[in-house]
Length: 360
Image (cartoon, rainbow, N blue to C red; front, side):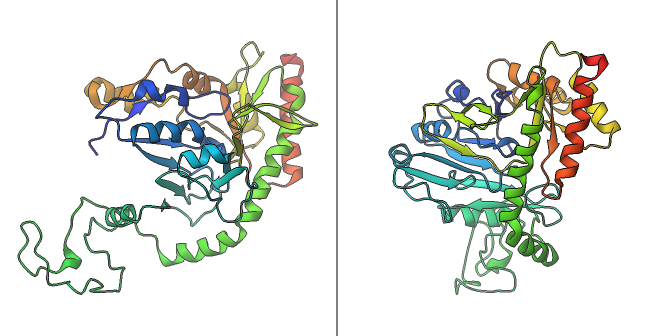
């Protein structure tokens, strides 16, 4: 699209971008937006990111595809300094805090309806726009071949000037319904997908709760292997224990995770590798995945791009955290349909592998 992405590193514990590198990524007059994902259902540091965006008047695009049902809260004074005073519907942290769903803090957010995600319509996704309706008109134009007309399908002439425009090099009176102001796409969902989505939406609260519970079962079940396995922490959490759950940093910010997956990293010095653990899980028909593309800069497409067009992207610092994730990390599913028996079977396989004779 002509934009130049700027890569910053990732934190191996949260899986999220290292927001302390945002300043180093900024270039006056060049940087226009921050676009980051809430990785595996763990909100990134929204307080730091929003402060950065407000400082330089940048757009914030939240990739919420892994994180439907996550929320993030911060002290009210901090939130109000960034323009937020109201909680999202259904969320209440009391008078001293503002709590909002992820996907509602930024200017735009994206949502995935791919089958493994929190809510599915079989495929596809959506763009969520909370405040600025001008963005809605632009997004809908891109979705609909780049049309300039804002009339929905099956509706004509809401402006009462359908044949009264003269735009660009088009002749006077050219039908506004067939005027194209962007190079667009055809990205409209189908009615059967919408029907599935409406039913899924009613079940979303139970899906979210099940994902949280499944993460907790796996974390408690594997707590005895912290000598060789490292587990995720929500952003702003500093530790987890069986009795107290999470402990938090001094920022006053909190992340409540609707987990897309259960992240495991094999620690340096373990008698087995991430790949060996993945192979054992696969042998026992336990689904597992890498943390998606890992360090994307090492993927063949990006290696070739950097060779052919070195100015097509920028990289800030060393990608040590991303490399660590790529080498040591995988994740298990937290799919709501998993039963306690299934999760205990997963735990049992990992117990046997980690504690087996060949691994100490």
